[in-house]
Length: 212
Image (cartoon, rainbow, N blue to C red):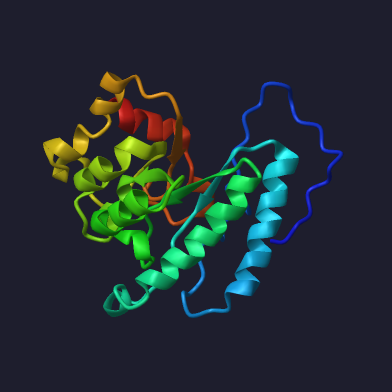
C-alpha cells in the first residue's frame, strides 16, 4: 500500500523476515508487460528498501502479465526486465524468488524452467495449488523448480483430496529425502468452504489436512 518502513523499527533478535511486501502479496512483476517499466521500478526500489530495513535477503517476485497468445512475442522483454531487477537486487545482496502464478509469463512448468535456466541468480518458489487451479500438473512444476527451490507454498485448491493423484500427494516426499532446508509457507484459502474472510488462513484446519 506504499507504506514507508521506519529505519527505527526494532525486530526481535533471531527473527527471520522475508519480504512479501503488502498484505496482498508482492507487486513485483505483477504488472502488464506492456505497462511503463519505469513506474514498476519505483515499486521495486521501495521493496528493496523494505528488504534492507527488515534485514530480509529474499524478495518474492513474478514475471509480468502476458497474454497467452503473446508469450513468445514478449519473451525478450520479460527477460530484459527480469535481468534489470536481478542486477539491482544482486548489488544489494538480495535474492529474487520467482513464484508460478496465473496469467504471468511463468505460469506453466515449461515457462518456469525457461526463467530459472536462463536468468542467473533467480531462485524459485513452488506453488502447487497455483498450477492445479490453472489446469497444470504440479509435478513437472516441482521438477523444474527443485534445483533452485527457496520456498514452497502449501495451500488448498479447488480439488478434493481424494481426486489428487499419487504423484500430487507425494511431491513433498523428495524434500524429505533431500533434507531440504529453506522456507515453507502455509496458506488456507478455500479449505473451510466458506467465503467469509474470517475463515481464511485457518492453520489448524490446514495442519489437519496435511497430516491426515
